[in-house]
Structures are given as C-alpha cells and as structure tokens.
Image (tube, rainbow over all chains, first blue to last red; front, side):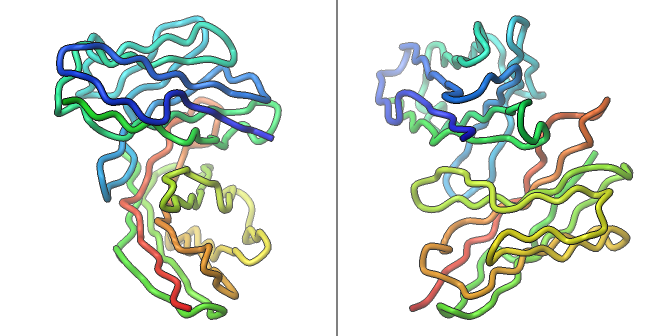
Length: 117
Length: 117
C-alpha cells in the first residue's frame, strides 16, 4: 500500500521547451503532495507543497512561474518546468501523505530524471 | 528553524555486522516526528523507520532500531545483521507535529552506507 508513481521516469528535452511531470497516488487519496529536487550526491530540497483544489505553496527562492504545479484531483499532481534550461536538469521527486494511514508520513515516488540540452 | 545534522558523510560495515548511523536535530518544539529514509542506487526513497517524539519507547522495525534521546536531540539508527541490500544513502528527517505545525520534512545531508561482503 501507499504507492506513489511518477511519469516519466526519464525525460530529455531541448532548451526552451516545457516538460510536464506527473505524480500519482495509486492506492490512496492524497490531499497534499510535495515536490522535491535533488542534485547528485546531495539531499532533497523541497520546492513546493501542492494542495488539492488550491494553489501550491512554494519555498523561498523557487520561481512559481518557472515551476508550475497543478493538483487537480486527489490522486494527481503535476509539475511543469516551463522554458527549461540546462540548469533545470536535475532529479525531481514527489511525495504524498496518506491520511488514512500514518498522516505524518510521506511516501515517495521513484523520481524523474530531467536532462535539458 | 529546525535543522537536521548528519555529521558522517560515509560509513562502511561488514556483512552480518551491526552499524549505527548518527543524527542530531535542533527544534524548539516538544512534539514532532523523526524519520529515517533509505535511498538505494535506484534513487527511490524508502521509509525505514518512524519515531514520535512523545513516545519514550524506541521504534524498531525488524533489523532496524533507533536510539532516540530527546533531551540530547539525538536520533541514531542501528542496523543489525547488515545485508548487501542495506547499501544506500540514508537520510534522517524531521517534521513538526501535524496540528498547526509545518508539514514539511527537513532532511539531513545524508550518509552513504557501504556493506562489504
């Protein structure tokens, strides 16, 4: 139980294009999802908290117009990297809370590797 | 602001031996949660163990156990009978208690564990 999926797992795109990453909770409803970014050999950096039916809350220093988050349903949140540039290349991970279980625990997706050429 | 410190960037252990990973944190809250997550080479974040600060009893999950010292703000992870599959990055994480507190996870920098056959 508490399975979170991400799609795609790998994406390569040209500079200037936009890329959408999906995060789905497969066997539970997630009113809150989280988006992280992880650089090689570093820890996870929280980018934003996504709440179903409302605007995402972005961490300081994260450009909300650059990283668009939509949480349209209880099982799906999307992160769109707009006008991607090589410096946006990274590993993006989402997580979700399952309120029917241990509500304080975040369950993580497998991550998406983004490479911008 | 809450902080989490993992002072050892790398450790190694012989298969079947026991190893202890250290973590300290700083908070002014009295109620909170602490976690250990494992990130193997696949980069999937996996919950290892969870501890509620208001519980004095140390959490255990099979071969994994914690030594939670609230006064010292210390939260170490002990892995017994180490297996090759335990090789991974280990992250210590903190979050406020749910009611009225931040839902954010605060991560340490991580520690790379190598298991030698």
